[in-house]
Length: 137
Image (cartoon, rainbow, N blue to C red):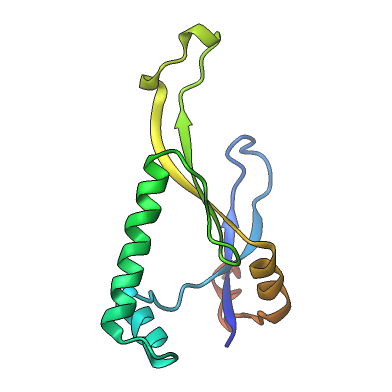
């Protein structure tokens, strides 16, 4: 298993005279659905597919409930989830109100063991034709 990357060109939006920069960008191969995860899990343990689906559904419900209550959810080795807000800024604290909220987001912070495992186990490869689209001519 490997993480395949392509090259992404990024322009400087603040300084239009600045030269663009290039970054490796992971390519998403597939989307693994909850049902597919449930099958994988049930195949590797004694729980039935239906049991795993029910458990994952309950986890989803409880995660949402906790976030709506303003709680931070610590999923141990998986990481933490918490609510974040994108808001309009104000020049004085008394001007701040709930109408300043533009978006409600969820921040995910992976655990240190998860990040360490990814860092030590992941193999990164460059897609063979990634550089071709930036060649002149």
